[in-house]
Figure 1 (spheres, protein in one colour):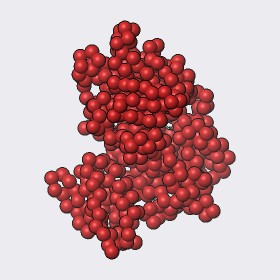
Figure 2 (cartoon, chains in turn brown, red):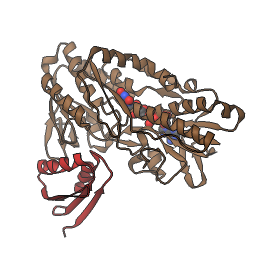
Figure 3 (cartoon, chains in turn orange, cyan):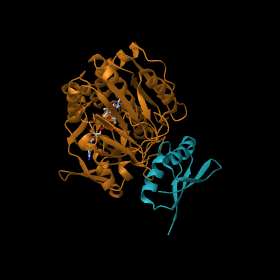
Figure 4 (cartoon, protein in one colour):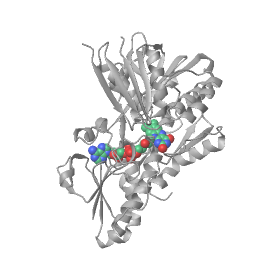
Amino acid sequence: MKIVIVGGGMGGTILGNNLARRLHHELRTGKVRITMLSASDRHMYQPGLLYVAVGSMMPDELYRDQAGLLEPGIVFHVDPVENFMLDKRQVKTKSGAVHDYDVLVIATGSRAVMDSIPGLAENAETFYTEESAVRMLKRLRGFQGGRVVITVGVPHKCPMAPLEITFMLHDFFKERGIGDKVQLHYTYPIGRVHSLENVAKWAAPEFDRLGITYETLFNMKEVDGKTKTLTSEEGSSCKFDLLIAIPAHKGMEVVEKNGLGQNGWIPTNRTRLNMEGQENVFVLGDTTNLPISKAGSTAHFEAEALGENIAAMVKVGSPVRDYDGKVFCFIEAGKDRATYAMFNYTTPPDPKAPTRAVHWFKVAYNKLYWASARGLL
Amino acid sequence: MAEKRKIDARGSFCPGPLMELIAGIKAANVGDELEVLSTDRGSAADIPEWIKKVGHELLTTTEENGVWHITVRKTK
Ligand SMILES: Cc1cc2nc3c(=O)[nH]c(=O)nc-3n(C[C@H](O)[C@H](O)[C@H](O)COP(=O)(O)OP(=O)(O)OC[C@H]3O[C@@H](n4cnc5c(N)ncnc54)[C@H](O)[C@@H]3O)c2cc1C
């Protein structure tokens, strides 16, 4: 059986290693072959970008060599897929190679799209890539005070990042001794400060306590760099001295180009994780259209369920369990306190008061991630 | 001439239906009527709130077998 995994990020890597362990014997005897096709020879721990933006991690700490993370037995090529030929059970890569599959897994991730809002890319800082996070750090270091607007579009990866960066900026400026010269203002597209209701209920009073103002039902329309004004689709506007943006995301262009899903989101069965209408094509992580958070932990729990199911399909011809929508997210509530949210399709999260212990656990996880990617955690 | 359009956002969760309405309103002409179908309770509360904030006209909100039908006229 030929298993092809497209994407060597969080979801693809955890799945590949999980499968290689479960199918160790079948790989050795040649009954199963696992091939991973990815766009990069390096693996980035993307959650670290949040810390790079405030100077508490360096970019080089976020990378590992992808081949070194994979179990022996997985055939790895840095050769991105350009064509998905699902009717022929084949994919074609940039180099022109054609790979046949019996089972295909698509885990190509998502990307922040700054240029969907006129003026945003030119006038806002963000931290969703290494380059932008480093640029944002330099801006923050040089900032002498004024109005900082944190503006959010949906959907975006890491559901907690908008709240986290806001709380972290509060402490960052306080520590620099200019807390009283900075006014933080937060905007969010729906009628509360976070899409998860209980998280919003926890975060709004925290904002009030820290003097952080906010406007909800605010969907970015355009940015005027001359007057330093951000306007919304709703007709309101806000002035800024420093604008930090988490813009709406899309899946990868290749997904949309191949007609697999609008805006790069692939219609996915919520429990089996197969692409709708395709029994042997599975979708993992950010690129699904599932109404759950686009988070590394989502990709991780999906990969575990899928690993178990694909291995069972090889061994007994049937999947064995459903994915229940499980997600776990830490929420940094400043520079040294954090809480967390755990939820699934049926049980909403219930974040508790932040503590130092949870923050230190997150700091530890920033290193432990590599064990998790290898499938050891 | 004013048109009537339907946005079927059933099965999509918060903030999906609201985002689809915002995109629909952007593409519509002043005077057009849009009907959003949603199975998400949160969006059923958010959408009227959004319409009020922006100043469009909320025409009707009804629920039938777990599906909310919200109609709105674009006024500006
Ligand atoms: C600033 C920031 C903070 C975050 N914080 C958190 C956090 O605290 N907790 C959390 O759980 N999550 C967090 N996340 C989100 C998390 O990183 C993503 O949700 C996760 O990486 C998604 O995994 P994935 O496998 O779907 O995609 P990715 O990990 O993005 O991997 C996609 C892979 O696909 C490859 N690829 C792309 N195109 C092709 C192609 N055409 N052919 C083959 N391969 C291709 C890429 O090279 C990459 O290897 C954060 C993200 C960011 C940016």
